[in-house]
Amino acid sequence: MLTPQGLKGKQYRITGNSYPRLGRPPKKSRKILAAVGALLALSLIALGGVQLVDIFSGKKGGTAQACASPGASVSGKPLAAPEPAGSPAASPAAGATSTAVPQPNAVTVNVYNATAKSGLAARTAEEFKKRGFTIGKVGNAPANVEKLPTTTVQVISGPGGLGGATLLASQVGGATKSADTRVDGSVDVVVGDAFTALLDPNQAAAALAEATKPSPTPSPLPGSC
Image (tube, rainbow, N blue to C red):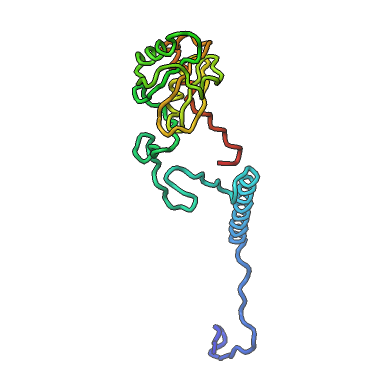
């Protein structure tokens, strides 16, 4: 019951089913809401543009895939650290192929003369001995190698003497290498008609460096690891 002023105490009852309604928000509030909505829309458009650029540049899902690195696997589980080249675990097992270049004193070289020049094998063996190699057999070429092409020097080894064969071949210009089935690490040097002398130490070192130079790693394709 309400008694409006000026009605001398008379009471009136408000009837009906109508209720007050809220008016529209002020214009200032509408402008702020519109600005926030526009900012959110621009942010979504910018994010979508960045993802499209990443996809077309070779990246998946807008982020670059991580390349597998030492110590980590694709599954996320750590891998064992690689063994150093000189560690026991990295050393070849008995009977395995050995390509590491050893020191001269670890290489037993058999020197054979495949020419008609008398004493050539002995003189060549003496030169190898001066350079620190261990000398094995010295003499005329046996029947199984005397027919091999020996324009300069033929270096023959088994799977366990590949490193020694590389070292010996670097001592002679134009030397060729071949393999047989021997099980030890000895190396045969068959001297041919075109042989005159060993390379000087500097030339031999340069030849060895060239022979053991690692192959260049191919560059990855764009967009790949």
